Image (cartoon, rainbow, N blue to C red; front, side):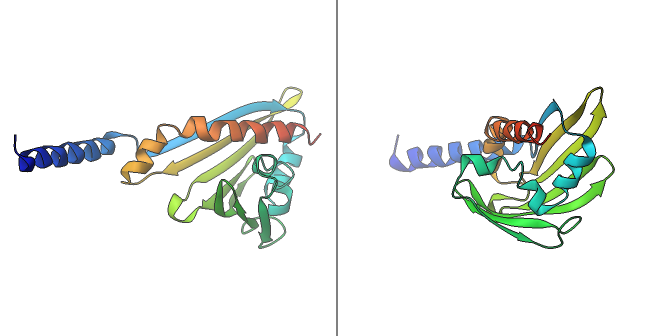
Length: 169
């Protein structure tokens, strides 16, 4: 086998592997749910505010040096914050409100633009909260491979946030 054949074979293998990543899911969703003590109105009121969200922001505990800068209205659509910390830099903005949910647009720059939703509904003696993160990984082969690990990477963070919501009572 000549060097040219070896390099050609290696290039073909790399092309096949890169192409194979396009078979991986483009869209990923991570969701966690819990029954918590605070009522849905309190949770959604805090969630609809950049400042209120900080009361249960799960990244604040894992990164004590996390810088948060609030912007926009105090509450409602457009309320949000800039963040800069160990796990990333970007913005989170309230993008939509419903009677049972708050949706956020997150801008992580080159790392993507995931969407998060916090849904809260009364259930028995507590409130059923579902915290969801969704991302479109596009055609980026590295992002698609990372998408395979998203639940393991983001899931524990959402669980910490739900635990912090439970302490709001």
